Length: 552
Ligand code: ISL
Ligand code: CA
Image (spheres, rainbow, N blue to C red):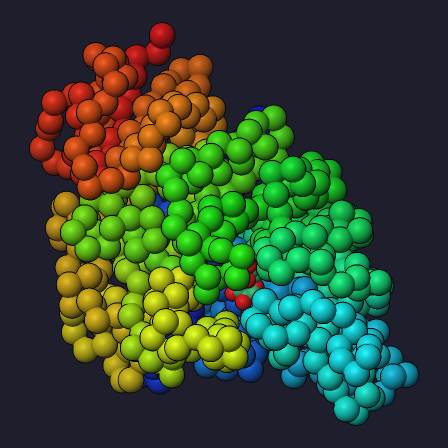
């Protein structure tokens, strides 16, 4: 397997609106990120992935872009961007930009033209279809509730929007549109950005006959009808050959519907992307109704996801590892215990993230164990997915308090509360009213209080990034899970010719007696989330240890 910087990198994800406000308007911005560059560097990460910062009406957290060539005014100016990029590079950090090319904003000039008339030259940049039997062209549901088609009376036709109605899907079948997309990517690549995270790349090739879905399971509809369309490989290959190949840049594909069976189709060495995000574990606790239909998850299934994906990339391809991002609940609240074992379980999850095979991505705030927030009314939500989801839920007769249970478990607001920097006003995020209410635990969970505590989650994170850097086996070694049939423990080796590490994780609040001889006698603990020692045959609640084993 050839070695590259992006296989060795640890990536820190920044949601700019909630990271740091520099001018007191309550909205995080680029100068805020510039202020925190030394902090980011101090974590031991190598690259930053920025959620979209382009001009946008902000219907969906900036994933609805109205001008791909300019910066969201609330976030600053192009000069700030240039300074941010230079500041990252000076510190040896890379920048991965988020690009949303599956859809634009309905306020993009292309769409404004497109809707004017059936013969407008931009008409074909989007998907317009006549209605059927007095309704939309087919029965596709949108990610954010309701039909994926919106009627527009100007021309008496419907346009396709897999996400919100302010996010019309771009028609990649149109070669002129594709040239426009390459041109805008070139603009950013020429500035020297190091990577692109390509939003919902899995859905850019549509089944243009738009067949009805035959299932009410939304995630199945995604896999069968929205993702992996007929020309997907061809479109990716064309982008690579026309553009990406001329730059030293990595491309990370994002998208639901990417499965272990089709992942390698995305990652062709000559014509594909460099790596992908997969959602195996992210959909584990969703029932057939999707996000607001939560079901319990099982550790056995969770382990299986990592095994299956590791197998998919055994010989070829490369994956990423993440336990949360701006679209999902906080990792400690979801996979750990954000109450009694908050500290231990956050550290355990960090251990997993930084010892698994694949490029690790950590979401801002997870390095200090930020937790889910609690909305007491749907009015407090800032997320279109939740707001629309509630509208739908009401039609099904669900009460607000019932819906809130689901939202507080899995809604996207959980991840988007502002970063908790210190225990001063507004947690040091802003000097005035923040755009979104801070988590109530800001005084106890924040960067400042963890900075000087050698046992804090943040310093544990630093120890783990250092460990990953100094033990290349964690990047390039094979992944060897130990089968235990246990709902409580997760054990695996990482092994190379020179080194062998054993990772033991107790995903429970119980003391676990380990099988005899599991831990080799002369195994040396390198890092662990308890500071006191224990009998070798036991694991304490939520204990995580990384051992160095003698090479046999
Ligand atoms: O969160 C999900 C499931 O409910 C994912 O399927 C998610 O919608 C999907 O991965 C696409 O997400 C990305 O594009 C969306 C945007 O809202 C998300 O924030 C972004 O990460 C539309 O642009
Ligand atoms: Ca601001």
